[in-house]
Image 1 (tube, rainbow, N blue to C red):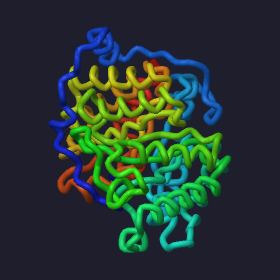
Image 2: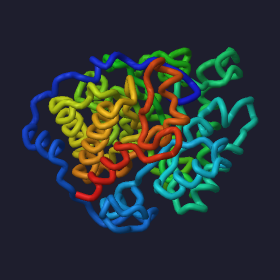
Image 3: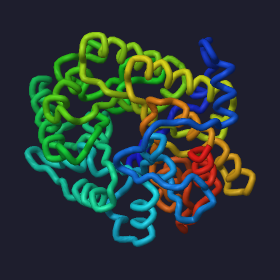
Length: 381
């Protein structure tokens, strides 16, 4: 669900399921809404700084550092030549992730041919600005090039192709990319496995065996770069629901027999309907149960789409951004708070949801919106 490759998300009702009963629901809700702070020592990738959000020189990355949280943004190398884009990205954020340029279709466009130019440009920019790099994504049902989908390959061939892809891409970025979304969006909203070329059409040899192919991809990824943190990433998994239950069952099983899974990514593409106590408490409870497995939790693709840019809408957006930032601060295993882009100028939302937009903390002129202030305030509590 990315800026150049469009997919309609499930209805918002799927994200507004009631929270299942859990110990401390009332406390979690109160904490989310009041925005109490907390955290640990600083992140190695972003310098610490003053905690007054009104100080013009205080950046989000400085405010997040004492909480050991990386403030991230998805980025595209084609915009790095734009001075405002580069300045905001390199100043405010301690992490970047390729929005498109590390996906299979772009980085491996022909059999035996890899194009690392876009990803390499982003890595070079990150290194020059003391930023961490998060990789996205190795196994996904979208952005699969024609040479794979129309190649008539048997499962054994696809297995070899995917293993080579993982080895080559992760090997190229070993020591430069600290974490990867190894598998992206493998579950349907009802918790069943998504039919894909990698799973069962024809798959890589594990059709009908549930998340076994995800396990294989994680094993290959760990062998390719043992130092990298490995994640499963999905959307509509933010609250306790059928999809997140299925992901939790997979993660619990993987952890029980040593599969190299380090964390779960929660994309968090939402609108203002997400802002209610039941939903937010369910999100907090969901993060906690994954944290209890010993997994890191990353908010990976956050944006909050609006139907207009009225003052009331922008303020409501800011409130929700602040609540989600507070939730991450309060969860010790929440290590990344990343938006899908950072400026409305290049957001994927208007192209996918006609009539919607204004989803990010900076407007299309790179001016800070109320959402930016709310994130800053949440980090300063």
